[in-house]
Image 1: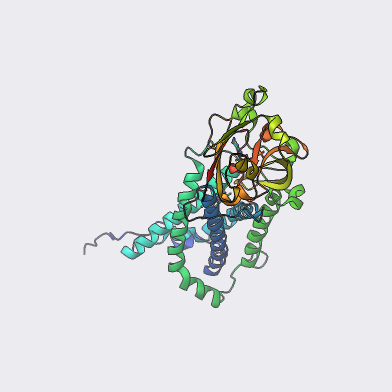
Image 2: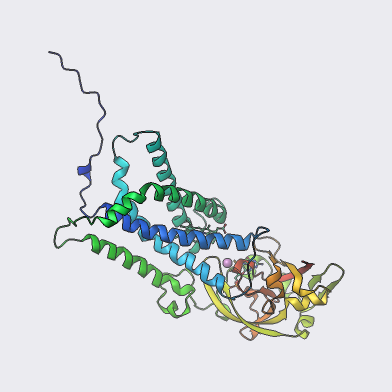
Length: 387
Ligand code: HEM
Ligand SMILES: Nc1nc2c(c(=O)[nH]1)N[C@H]1C(S)=C(S)[C@@H](COP(=O)(O)O)O[C@H]1N2
Ligand SMILES: [Mo]
């Protein structure tokens, strides 16, 4: 009798290839819940940061409490960094499923696999691009970081919702029917693994949060921005040399042009110093998650609006820098911040004239605003009536 060869495809890798007894549906469910919560917090705080920087017509952001953005963006970066170990172990707990056989069972199964591919790719992209950004290492990213990170966030959240919808029954049964822990005595237990992941996430938080939570600063050994020898005890984002403004700010010909709908005034540094001076304590809160409190002295923006004949209770301002090029050379101040008496054209920081790298001769400082909108070396302000 002639036997036909068995032509059915066989799985290249079988269940026995993955031997760790630590893997279990319950472990994956616990890690998945933690990661899902962290992603929800990251998505919410990240979207808020995007809306503040690119406000659509319906969006309104208040100028108080002064440190609200400092908190939301601090939480974004702290939670994002805690995702690094969570995502690593979560993927490790499920990667044997990549080798499940047959790889495609039905159209619905294929769609579900495709959503997993999107979820894994977008999640890894978010964590890697976020870490590179806060480390200020832009070279490996041949695209504009913020745009990539923004669109990948929608992909990640969309795929995550599909994933939660598919896996919810599995998670529920894994959490209600306890699975016995098959790990051998003396080796790492499932509970031990969860504890290790939690401790790693906690350590990452403790060693980086000091870039925005001041009491933790001394132990912030991993923070990209630590309080150090920065001029006037505030970190510098872009230096005056990097912005190419040193010649202009030291030429002695500095003029601030303030324009309203019917009047333009030009003010020398002496003119600005002769206007009523006010002192406020406000943080610089960078989108990158670091922040620092400063004591700023200068002229109220609302006083300059009045100077050019605009009612400051309904006004907005467009602020331009001496810096000729650069993404952050201009910013728009919305009505809540323009009328806020804390919003200053600051001339001094910590009682001294502004350091050149902090925006000498004059810079914008407003409450509850991302650092990117606190324009340095300002040369022109255009006031518009918003009523
Ligand atoms: C290690 C993880 C992460 C880090 C370190 C991180 C860091 C950052 C930073 C520095 C920004 C400010 C970008 C800028 O305005 O220049 C940002 C914005 C943002 N992040 Fe993350 N992020 C992480 C994870 C995530 C995750 C998991 C999500 C969502 C699922 C997310 C969603 C967003 C969104 C929507 C923005 C706003 C982007 C924009 O302004 O257009 N991030 N993130
Ligand atoms: N003209 C100009 N202003 C700018 C920037 C810039 O690149 N150019 N960087 C902004 C960013 S991203 C931050 S976080 C703050 C930092 O201010 P500091 O360097 O005084 O701490 O300045 C903002 N003002
Ligand atoms: Mo910034």
